[in-house]
Amino acid sequence: MQALTGQIRGQIRMNKLPYIRRVGLIGDVHAEADVLEAVIEFLKSQGTDTLLCMGDIADGFGDLERCFRLLDDENVYAVLGNHDRWCLSGELRNLPECHFFDDLSESAQQFLKQLPTTRAFMTPRGRALMCHGIGENDMGKILPGDRPVPFAARAELQQATRNGYYSFLLNGHSHYRMVRTVEQSTVINAGTIKREHEPGFLLMDFETGLGQSYDLEVSPHTLASTHRPSIQITPAEEIHLPQVAVAAS
Image (cartoon, rainbow, N blue to C red; front, side, top):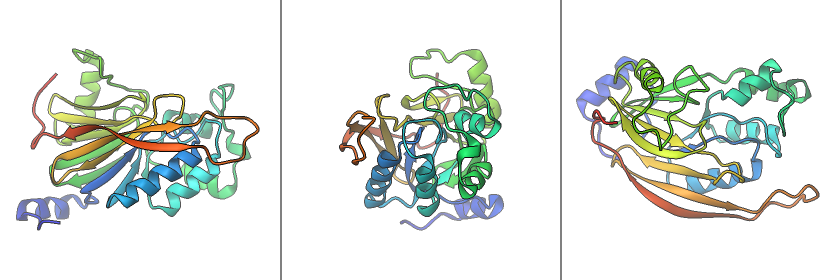
């Protein structure tokens, strides 16, 4: 890795933020333990220094506790999604594929309870705020087709990023992969690895400004199957980040 400039080194010392450069971004998991494991293995093979998970780990057909173990064992930074929050609080437990907090082991309960709603990082291109939706609002979303971005979402983004203090907002929730600059910050949505929802993930190198979106092809769930599903990972789209986030709609 190239030597950091004095300015960046000073910012890191000042903010005491974890420094991230080549990053794997994993969107909503929804208990897809087998897919999560395959994605983590792939991203590690690509020389990533940091793995991020955007929340909604809970509520799905798969093994939630195994998902927690994978994230913990692989030192993946994760945040709380709205489905995780509902699992904690007992809300909306009539949803399909839902998990119940009381059914989890003590270690899984502790993992879920310690998840923050946001995390902050320093990158070679500025600060990044990681969350599930938009900042503290885990239900907030900006969609690829939002042109222009609705006023309420734009205002939430400005508040969450502190009017450009954070150059990047790293999120999930919508299940749509997207890299888009809005106002003074670039929104990078990791999408989802839930197999029914056009699954995929992202790899971003914040030093070079280059990234890659990947598609996942995963065999359907079968109720009786105990075998690992067929999982194929293929490159989808190259990503180019702005050197400095600029105003755009």
